[in-house]
Length: 285
Length: 352
Ligand SMILES: Nc1ncnc2c1ncn2[C@@H]1O[C@H](COP(=O)(O)OP(=O)(O)OP(=O)(O)O)[C@@H](O)[C@H]1O
Ligand SMILES: [Mg+2]
Image 1 (cartoon, each protein chain N blue to C red):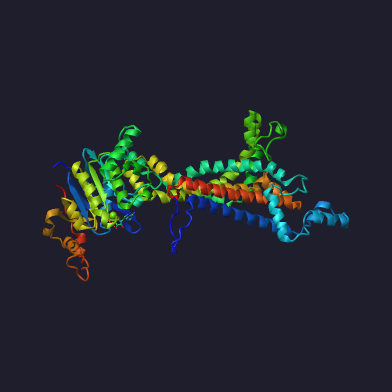
Image 2 (cartoon, helix red, strand yellow):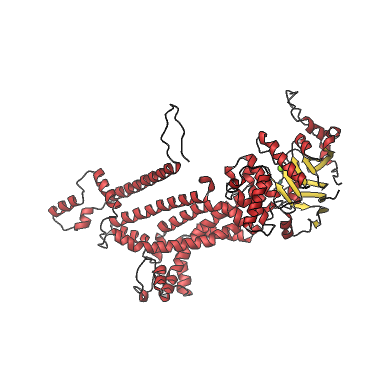
């Protein structure tokens, strides 16, 4: 399998007054034309991993790695100018809440066409036509009308489909979806995920799906990385989750409420201090 | 959108369009505010220990003359009736006669107001065109030298009294360097050379195509305008910086960067567009402050504007002029607030 992205020994460090804090502590993984899930509890470093790939960690955060290769580009030595050519065009990202991730004072249409016009020389009319078609592809009814709406005029589910359209319109090979549905109504979560899944699969893209919901990820991914405290503690094929050995993974699996056999209380996830210090598992292929 | 909701009793209410409700609300607020302003100025006029009759007829008039003028001025009527007459007069643009100048107060104000308007407008333009970019840069390069510079500018702006800065400015740029003209609006040789159209000398001289007058007027206004501009710059840049910092930390900025946009586009097309709305209010407020608060500057620079007019009138016990000037300034303040409110609605898609 040709790999779209290779990352070795990635670290994200924040200098603080009492020394430095490592949010991501030396993880290695690669991404092919597959759907890769990253699962872990809050603060385990999932978002920082996603943002480090696009080199969008805010100051004073520092990204270091032994290797970060995307296609033919070495991300480690890429200038900010080269990174701008990569962002959107080669790798894109969808964030958690469309209410905050869309610009409130720009129309949906101008935000989508902007994503396209940044990377392709097109007339405005042509870009508009492509944007309407893209909105249609994410199952938005009456896309012409939606083009002229402002973000506060669309629902959450619609907003996230607009985000998907916006991020996929320049045809990137990699999509990072950082908890794309956790801010949405349960009733529309699956619909949005299915639309995203279909587009990503049809286009043969690589998907990094970040979530804290292991069951959800196992339905939409091929391979799953389990992160704990900035490290990968286990790598699983989605179909073989029952073979997972690490107690943290098993804990995550068991912590999901089972509607058919409700328990009076969820088991509190036990944590072993040794997990934190165990070396990161490599997810290179 | 029409309001078609029904009352609990099942009765259908009259559908009132929302814009009409809003406009009616605004008009009502303005009316009440202005009436309150008139009431305050009216009461000030009554409680001042100045006899309005004596101010008109002088000390040596007879008792009969006194009584006649007393009636003419309506002072024999109850206070509420006097207030009604006052409001009616003001609505007709009649603020009475100035004792000091012997002219209608409205005419006096029409003459002096353009001087203040010109000064405050230029000051605000300086404040906006330097203050906004400075604030944006300070936010973008937070903690760097440009941010420190903006902070220093703000600090000086807050801690230095304006008359002190004005005097020092005059001393340096007029007295020592001779780069600018001294006090006043125009040198004596240039007075009355261009016809008055707007009362704004810079504009009038441009209309007349008279460059020498324009240059002289500019040379006179630039120092006081820079001084006022400096104070509004300090305020505007500080507000711009904090608005921008808030926006630059939001998620949609990350989205914009993920798209591969240049930093320039991220800052101006995305972040700045979101602060325009708040900036309008800040600029309107800064402008109103310069219009009403340029008294000290006008005195230092012998600027024949409304601030100086009110001060001189006050010292001469000329109450009609003082009240007229106060009402005009108050009205402008209210008008600017409404104007910024309207712009706000125009620019913010969420307010429609
Ligand atoms: N600017 C910063 N300075 C210091 N630490 C930071 C900073 N930003 C993030 N962190 C830390 O980095 C760690 C990882 O954060 P990250 O956002 O990647 O977690 P996450 O796995 O995405 O969690 P969540 O599920 O809550 O989104 C957190 O412990 C967080 O406190
Ligand atoms: Mg996160």
